[in-house]
Length: 329
Ligand SMILES: Nc1ncnc2c1ncn2[C@@H]1O[C@H](COP(=O)(O)OP(=O)(O)OP(=O)(O)O)[C@@H](O)[C@H]1O
Ligand SMILES: O=P(O)(O)O[C@@H]1[C@H](O)[C@H](O)[C@@H](OP(=O)(O)O)[C@H](OP(=O)(O)O)[C@H]1O
Image (tube, rainbow, N blue to C red; front, side, top):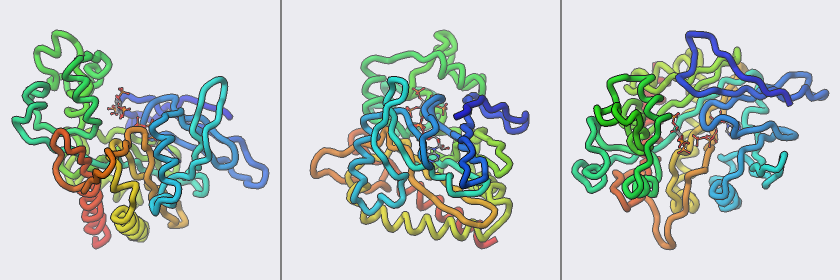
């Protein structure tokens, strides 16, 4: 495997994350060179696997999710899970490479879910006396940790500055750091997570260039424009995506896994190519956790600390509505 740093053209430079393109070796029977790209997430989390698979850095929680997904109606809509493998002393989850069957694919990562918080709640009073409305897509445990043992993050302060030098409060400027929930909350209010319940994280185009500069893509019109560009104006592809999403929406309604898990930070991966073949899959279960025995979620009602709602279906319904309006153009 040859792994190389990707240097994007200036107009598509990512905001701050280093993205990786992993080139698979040429497979004799295939004659085509496949390249895989990581559009979001932690740098260095992935390695090439064998026979149409990728290796994702081991996470116990994610492994448990893939095991529980076996036999659930949702299983066909998530990457195939092929167990844990060791490479150079490190463990990885072996997953089906979802873009492997496409020819020069276009790929989009949409992070799903939101947690709207009532103003004046305990958490907002304790933690978030800042200038944005309260909202989040991270685990409740992270809030509790930040409240009890606030850990100041200079890296997140720097990421914040890069986008808006006026975003940090005077106190944050002084300490040159912010807490993680504060950063995540700020990050979400900037994007469509807050208003639509999902946000675009990254896009790969057929020519191999990528954009991850969607932190400020917030309004319906802006999101629609990104989708329009993503399919290069091909409404047939939007119609196929709509069918796939409607199917996923239906399946989620009957999935035991979905009903009994808090789905945080998971994405929908959109993939299509020049043949108009298109697929949507659910990825990233690193922060998806099982609810206590007997508890279920509705995935649409607003989040309040303790109810563990994730807003997944609210985001999905907004996404469906938005693509429906694009399909009618
Ligand atoms: N099974 C897959 N097939 C093809 N591409 C994938 C697959 N899983 C992940 N990717 C690519 O890797 C990116 C990151 O994936 P993922 O969200 O699982 O990583 P992560 O490090 O857990 O992210 P985060 O830090 O947001 O939790 C996706 O945006 C996508 O481009
Ligand atoms: O996309 P950005 O703006 O770069 O911000 C990162 C993103 O929100 C990741 O989801 C998060 O990892 P987790 O989902 O695992 O919490 C990471 O936290 P981290 O730096 O603590 O890993 C953030 O830095």
